[in-house]
Image 1 (spheres, helix red, strand yellow):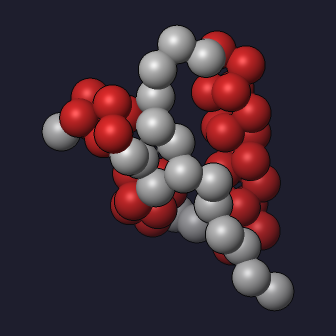
Image 2: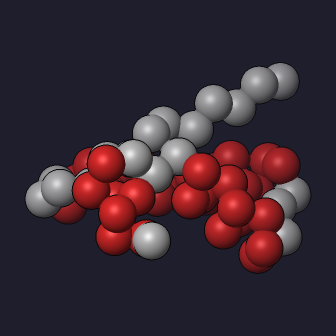
Amino acid sequence: MKHKPTLFTGGYNPKGAVKWVEEMEIIFEVMGCTEEHKITLGTSVLREEANQWWK
C-alpha cells in the first residue's frame, strides 16, 4: 500500500492545516512511525512558506 502525503505550503488556512495534520497522523499510524520518523516525514513535505518557517 502506498501513502503519498499531501504537500503543505503554509499560509493562512486553518482548516487546510488541520486537514493536513489529520492526514499525516493517519499515515504515521499506518506506517508505525517513531517520533523521529514523524518529524523526518512531516518536514519532508513542507514547501514554500511552511518550509521557510521550519528552517
